[in-house]
Structure formats: C-alpha cells, structure tokens
Length: 169
Image (cartoon, rainbow, N blue to C red; front, side):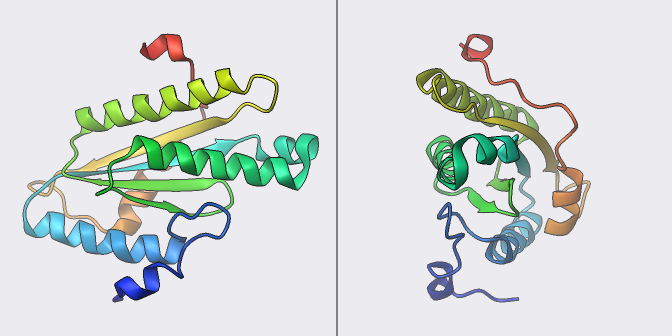
C-alpha cells in the first residue's frame, strides 16, 4: 500500500497529532522493508497508557484528552525526528526506531520514562500518567519480519512501567 506525503497531513490522529494507525502501518512497513534491504537493525517500542478510564471519570473528557495529548508530546519530545510514531488505538502507541539496537532502545525507553516521571512530578495535583511498554528489535541478518509481526512481538507486558525520576537520574 503506497502512502503519499500529501496524505500524511490528513492522516493524523485528531486528539494527539500523531500518525493514525493506518498511516503508521504503511510508513512502518516501508521502513521495515528498507531495513531488510540495507541489512540494518530497527526496534519497535509499544506504549500503552494505563488508567485512562479513571482519569476520564475523575477529570472528565477534558482530562482524558489532556492525558492523550500530554503523552503524545512526551513521545515527540523524547524521540528522534527520524522515528515513526503513531497512535494505534485508544490507549496504544508505537514508535519504530530505524537503525536502533536493543541496547539503544533501552536508553530510549528510559528517556521516555524519565520524561513521564518529570511530568508527573510537575503535575502532582492532577492525574498521574502511567504506561506499560513492550519492544522488539529486528536483526535483518537473522530475521525477516513484517510490521504486523513486530507489533505482535512488542505487545506490552502486564507490568506497568513505574516512572520514577530517581531510578534513572
């Protein structure tokens, strides 16, 4: 499926401004094929926001929308411009990081966790944002994969990431 640059501007999630799932998958599929062709590793990180229902109940639609937007801003501020970032569902996000090893992905996950912890510390009087993460790294010399396979492999685990600045500072 081909996606033109012109379509990208209109194919963003209206609440976060990130790529919507359809466009994310199309762009990510292209990036995966490119990585395979040039024998470059890449990592896919999935993020799942936690407790959105409780945020909505306590703070209304405005709080819910604010949580989505704040998390999207954390991702935009924590990732490279060359990374492909999208919203996959109500509380699910993904970031595809070209030319990124597993060890480098650990740094990215810590960076996002630290930014989330800093946000929570600054906004202690409102809701806390919490996330679960999952990730997979593709080594094209031993593995051929599709974006669908990578998304499945990177499904977040049952444990929420506890974003605490002191753990990473």
